[in-house]
Length: 96
Length: 150
Image (tube, rainbow over all chains, first blue to last red; front, side):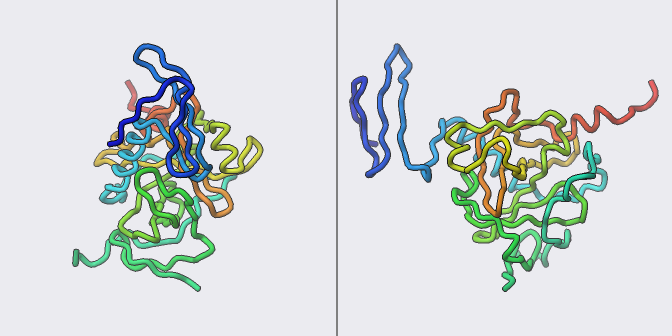
């Protein structure tokens, strides 16, 4: 890992278009400003990690064919049903 | 021309190219750039967001309005800009669902909804207060059901 010491008001550059500024240092807290192209998403690490874990947990689902999932609050009256290509619930032959 | 994906979950699935949703940034931590919504039963509010580029990725999602009566999405100004959205823009909203063996164990991630508009999707961090990373999906529905006479 690259270690860089910066003072308040100084910046680092990542690649050619990501600029990270040290805006304020106060005790244990550092306030950073990040300028990056729109295509670069910037998250607080803990939030990114939480969402990543939930996405992975969702993708682990074995099957949602439980017979009695409770009905939703509204049955979609007045709103289009979720679009979707119909598929069979039956999993493919177990060759994997 | 229809495309066919070989899904570990559903077998061979033919996808109408018009139904493909482009995710320029993928899903957070999962990636993938093209997804399609698959449904196992017409009318089932829980549908599958299935990756086309990597068919091993598929996850259940649902429209939060069907289960949470007061759910709201607030974008950061940056996200609103990036996505070209404002309050007046109609957009489809989905939340990811973590399934469980019992309905009471199902949860939805209210913190990171997926917004879909004009064939493009983005998973964003919701700035609205009170959003739960693991909101019990059926809590409100079950609370409204008449319980056994006490």
